[in-house]
Amino acid sequence: MVKITTDRGIVGWGEAKSPVAPRITATAIRDLAAGLLIGQDPTDPELQWDRLYGAMRIRGGSHGFWMDVISGIDIALWDITGKAYGLPVSTLLGGAFRDRIKIYASGIPGLRADSPPEAWDRLQATAEDVRSRGFHGTKMGIGLGVEGDLRSVQTVRDTLGPEFMIFVDAAGMYGLTDALRLGRGLESLEVGWLEAPVPPEDIELSVQLTQALSIPIASDQIFNRWQVRDLMLAGSIDVVQPDVCRTAGISECRRIAEIADAFGKGVTPHVSIGSAVQFAASAHLAASFPNQTWMEYWYGNNPIGNAILKTPLTVENGYLLAPDGPGLGVEVNEDALMRFAV
Image (spheres, rainbow, N blue to C red):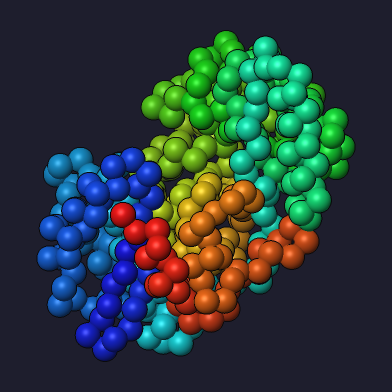
């Protein structure tokens, strides 16, 4: 979590997606980024973005920890800017196309083909639980073998019926042959998109998949606008999923969405299991994207979700209501948050 306080006492919150070695990101913020920011105007988030990005360009900072650093800072600066002007971030981004965002429940785990019968019963029960909570779509984590993946999706499809939207994420686990076999099987199951079927470094594999399959190919392995431009020009992706906490924040996610829109492609924030700050920032982005589709929403237990907010985010009938207060529109309960501090 990133907290920035201005000389006028305005507090902005951000999040850097650092599930691996978070102290590295924290150290980079304290020892490098802070020195570049102190004394600057916090209501110029895109200017500060360029200064931060340029500071590590020569050291290859276009991926990984440095982009996590920029993400957390950029979100906090947009929060500050909105509070300074008394406007929600979605308004600062040009206006809200929608005041509620259609969300899918993320986190249903697929199974290996040789899983015991009780595991398949649990999978069916999990799918029923998702529907009982009012969701109209879900995303499954697959990539455990083509046979197990297809049986897992078939189980959820049989449980939830033909009208329920199912997305899948293979986490880059397959080569071309298995990805094609998987994709063709998923087409008959009417899956909404196949996310990250092959390693993201191999654009050519994604090109072949996109050309061969009717199911849309999606990717959350998104790092910056230049990468997305190249993916669009190559024709290797149908749905772009930038993560605001690792794709360099609100500033870069907006630029990525504009590029995708120019190519007629859908865009949706990748969220996974972030804090309430990530959910709020993603909601503002989703509200402001003209080419927004569904938005990811972790439906399981999340101790730094609504529990750290003084007023919780609202989910109604499968939609997340976009916060409409200044900045991110959420107020963090620091006492509740610090219970989870390392």
